[in-house]
Image (cartoon, rainbow, N blue to C red; front, top):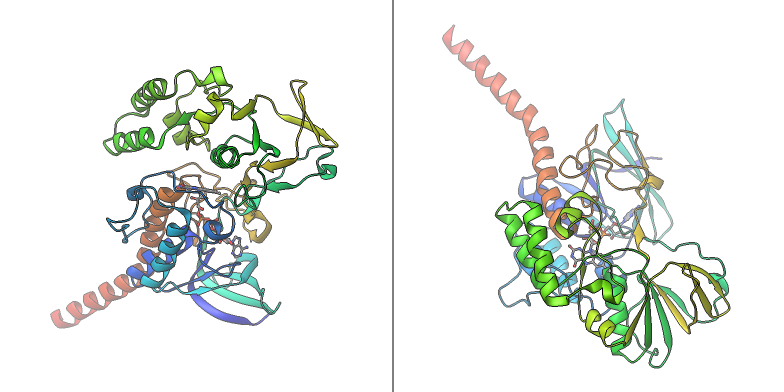
Length: 403
Ligand SMILES: Cc1cc2nc3c(=O)[nH]c(=O)nc-3n(C[C@H](O)[C@H](O)[C@H](O)COP(=O)(O)OP(=O)(O)OC[C@H]3O[C@@H](n4cnc5c(N)ncnc54)[C@H](O)[C@@H]3O)c2cc1C
């Protein structure tokens, strides 16, 4: 296939990670091209997030490099405001994007020293070939919804939607709805449903750290002052005990490891209470503390033997990366699960000019750090030969003058 575009840097994905890398490169004078499957930048926030979603962290932790949120912006940005911010960001730094381009394959050609990238123009179905010296994987840790295999689920008579498709509780008033999964999406969707008058249950299989946004902001601030994680954990748990009491009494057991240590060392993120806990305490949201085992008709069977009928099911069961389907590289940068194979902060750079951004579950904050690191590294590699040439020329001139 003939190469349609020769680029210095190709970035796959125009979410916050991809456009942040492009902007940081542009500020260093390096041109890049972002290939994006969807028809907009930041598609996660526009097409895969429910209406009432607000960012979990205060706006100062959710700004991409070199463009803070304005003073008048709310502390916790609504989904649509953040999507608009990403549009403005891409425009401000003149990020070059090709939308509706799905990357199907990327491999390094040792002969030419370039990445050969094959994409499809989804508007026309035409294949396209690109070549670049550097390739940045920014295609997201949440690219594809994950649906667990539950025997009988396919025959459930009511609606079954994944959190990625859930927008609002419209039409759910008075219906018995089961939310499967107790991460941030599951807990917030349970709140949304209960507030709209649905008879809401949430299946809570695992342990979780329930925190408030305000408590977590204190934790983030302390981390900024290099307070050790174990000290932050103790303070966070103390504040949580005051605010929530013993959450285990209501079916929300906390892990033995503290929330900040867990966040730093594993993909587990705390759950930010948006009002769900009050609804659990008041009985408006029922906690079913077991995994879903199977479905028979409209009855859901749980691992602890419980059986309950429902009218609808929302699967807040997570997402997965799809990088391994198209990235043909065994350099160890990306693991079998499509996420960065090495932990933070060793995660972002592979061999032969390969990088990844936003692939270690560090949220928007992580996207920013990755963007600066990657752009810094690429620009240095590009400048190095030029500086060497200039140095050689200067040395040659000095030699000539001196002789
Ligand atoms: C519901 C929800 C709420 C969240 N809330 C927060 C929050 O409040 N704070 C926070 O810090 N984090 C939050 N997160 C985490 C959030 O996912 C990440 O912070 C962020 O989306 C990652 O950005 P990204 O650019 O790396 O990936 P994405 O936003 O997923 O962008 C990746 C892009 O790559 C494109 N792509 C994928 N494969 C290909 C391909 N083969 N070819 C071309 N394009 C491709 C996709 O279409 C997508 O647009 C939330 C996540 C979810 C799902």
